[in-house]
Length: 416
Ligand code: 17E
Ligand code: FE2
Image (cartoon, rainbow, N blue to C red; front, side, top):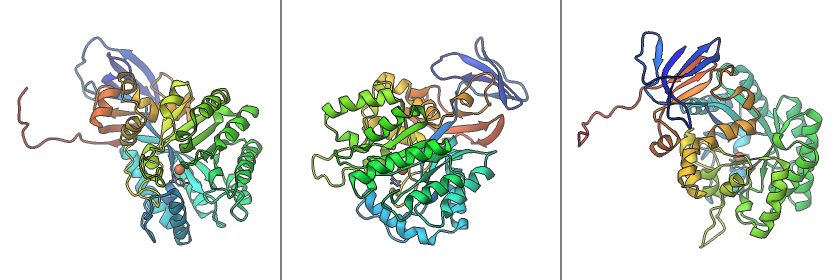
């Protein structure tokens, strides 16, 4: 493949990019615009960017909203209850067909890497087995990391710890947890220690649903970060949601940030999900309930954005468009300055690559797998503002998805 007139991020020049054997073989700066010839792909000055990454989604529950009942309160806990009603209706065929539909949405919007949480609080572990099988079956088309996620608790659900360990033995890549859902603070702390020990025993990554509540007393993040620090595993550990941090006292946060920085753990925020699920017990003023993304980022801590849900018991919208999530995230976290906009795509690309631990094979660099997306815009700022379409997604040198840009039929009002 020979691509001409491509723009790269943080760079006003045009580039010619060659791909051989599925790898980027050369990336050369052009002198002005080149005229295309047969067999070349003319990027027309559009942005060629590393693929989008969905670092936090629940594929097992996707597309089940309203089955058998809708979440009327809009709270996390009612979502867990509704999902618990849906679980007995699961079958491998049901999960597979919903996952395929959801993957199509994600792939059509430029996603090539996914980390999915899969509920292990089910004695049959059907979701976990089905997702591990799909991960292996689809490895030519999409990268999936499976998190063994104990939705109803490790220590508060019957045999929760055993099920979690069985899920790891069955092939999960990442160990999850939900300390704020355990019955007591003591059980929450113990659950974090249990999951860290399992990750060490099986040499796995960690991604914990941590403090997903408005309760400022929910302080499991400090336990997770300290465990990561003492076991020297920070870069392999992720804290997801951490919405309680929105409500922490600033003095406590200043102490906490010291530990977070030293631990080197990663953060994932799901702003559309959290703005919907949190603040539900407030009247007015009403908290936003999204973690301190701007402050974490300013402190040099790795943060990225995920969608979390697509039409599930927790959130009944969602469409696989990470640019929408990014747009919400920057608004809610008040990251609306020029610098924020000019680097905005980091939050759905490079930062997530660090969280997933895939940096070595990710990015537009000679020698790396030739995986990229072509966006209908020139730079981070314009892509964010216009919510640009992903025109093409190429994975290891092969076209995964290609789209015709939308065409306006009715003539514009003004000629310019
Ligand atoms: N489960 C959970 O505990 N939290 C969420 N945000 C979702 C599922 C979507
Ligand atoms: Fe989640």
